[in-house]
Length: 280
Image 1: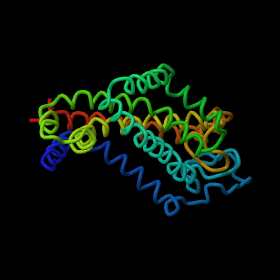
Image 2: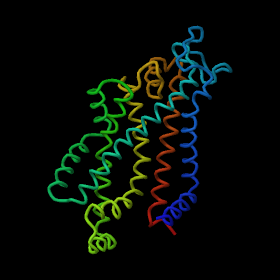
Image 3: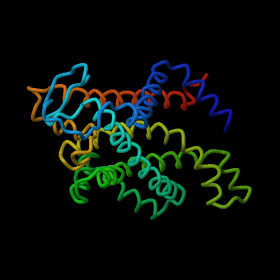
Image 4: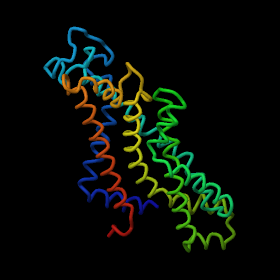
């Protein structure tokens, strides 16, 4: 296992695009954690003397419709947007791994039941499910994260189940069963660890999708609520001032683009590094 991890890390290091993407993601994480130290102003401080001011020395990214510093709000918004990417995916992984493992190992009617429910959820677009659940739960960042996590669940269930079905026919799994290992022991000791590589790749891609989903929900008024900043809520506020103050939408939009692009490139790099067909 250690040798495999070292080999995967070495393969990832050979991909400059993935390394740059990883650096960008880590940079966003540092910015989110250090927002109180980096932000020059209180992100919610209103200044009616500086309404929709363009970028300047005092406000490098300009101000919004009530004079709040856009740079400070972008920095603080990184916290909400990254949390909205990580927490829903964590919810989805925690719930989906047991379900996918159970479905793949048990088989039979239980597998059929889990997969029929899963297929029904997958038949509806991810974002539509998230919007419907967020509307049912009510506006707010926490409810939006719960909605996104539930909407992402079936993708992970299908991935884990498919990986389990492929792994459980391997010789080492059959050897463990022949030696008398119980089904739970085989599942936890021999099958589960080998589901992690494709899971890591899917996590990276789904975090990007969750960030876009949170931005969409906040744009619709179902996510982060004013005056607390998130990149999506900033876009929602900026839509009325696109012609007078385009910087209000430009910078949060660029942040969403950058983190989503970095996560997708990182996901591609992880897929290549963890796929034995790409390893030499």
